[in-house]
Image 1 (spheres, rainbow, N blue to C red):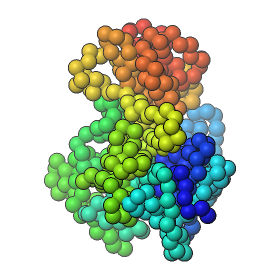
Image 2: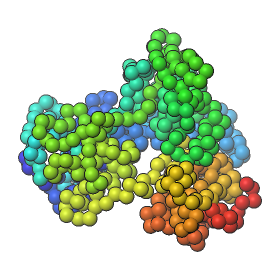
Image 3: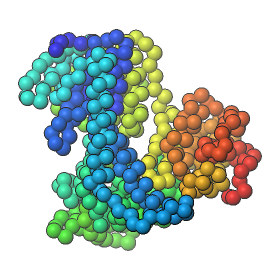
Amino acid sequence: MADSFDVIVIGGGPAGYPAAIRAGQNKLSVACIDEWKNLDGSYAFGGTCLNAGCIPSKALLESSELFHRAGHEFKAHGIGLASLQMDVAAMQKRKATIVKGMTGGIAQLLKSNGVTALQGHGRLLAGNQVEFTAADGSRKALTARFVVLASGSVPMPLKTAAFDGTQIVDSWGALEFDAVPGRLGVIGAGVIGLELGSVWARLGAKVTVLEAMDAFLPMADRQLAGEALKQFTKQGLDVRLGAKVSAAATSAKGVMVQYTDAKGEQQAEFDKLVVAIGRKPFTANLLGEGTGVVVDERGFIQVDGQCRTAAANVFAVGDCVRGPMLAHKAKEEGVMVADLIAGLYGHTNYDVIPAVIYTAPEMAWVGKTEEQAKAAGISVKTGVFPFIASGRARAMEAPAGFAKIVADATTDQVLGVHIIGPMAGELIGEAVLALEYSASCEDLQRTIHAHPTLSEAVHEAALAADKRAIDMLNR
């Protein structure tokens, strides 16, 4: 193994491995160091996203949704089932197979792009030196012209409900249950909490979500958040807002949780408790003395708009820096930095980063909410099209939700798009493109959408902004 490289990337998750691959494509010599370990102690590239986040959660969401649909929707299609059973072990095996295939694919991509893949711990030292500690404990000093820090994030703990790995678990633990909990408590009604709660609720768990904030999904458009809460309540999720957890005690009977809300002191007992209150940057033993890299009071590495740190030739990308903790944001930052290092053009448009929550119905949005636009002093117009008026959605037995467009009433420019409904995560791509190119409502109105498709909802929402929607008969 060489001791010197053009670029060393510390971290092999959705920020680090794209940075390493693009640097390799740019004909630079690259090493990518990653220390992720699975529960069996094996190393794997892909970070939290591929190993214990995005990919395994989507695998379980898909399995649980199919089970739910078989029990609740198939009859409407004329499909009868004598009995319906869920083999949790088989579901978990499928998930593990998908994860293994994806992480193995990352290792192959690194190799095929000339990246030296190193599994172990990387630590930045002064003068762009990197100390690499291998699995056997041996250490080696490496040097690079440029270093990219992509160390990711970890679940945020809650002092009043400490993880024990069995009854009180983090998001990774909630992906590994070997049986459906009878009573599942989830602390946190954010993206992770809602997705994990949905998985086990569909399989039969009685799910209670405790959210400290008084508002549901405060980062989302208020109309979308209201519809989401209505749908989750209809599905049986017990979402309790303004519920601040003060203690959690485990016993042979389960987990007793103490919390306060508007009614005063409350308690609830669960078989399992998932703490999903967010994530924090992971920078443990990442920086040695004298690196010049600055970390703020919340643990984030400080960077400029192009992810440069205060240290010369050292960049930081992904969850360990400011901005939303999203895999696609991390990927674009990694690619941007690799191109900048190579002297090429690199850019990430932070104004058009989509967000997706993979529940059923799915939620996705990009750009400004109606509330944000009004707060900025913009005169807005909105268009909403309900999926109950979509022929494709009706045929899919998925009529819940809507597509909403927020636009500047004066210039007609689209400012934000907010979707709750079937395949919202796929539909948002058109909206991201529209915002990237400063499209107007008229641009979307004059763009032909195939019929019958879900994407027509975006088209009709654009028309509805000018009170010109065609297919609103069933509203």
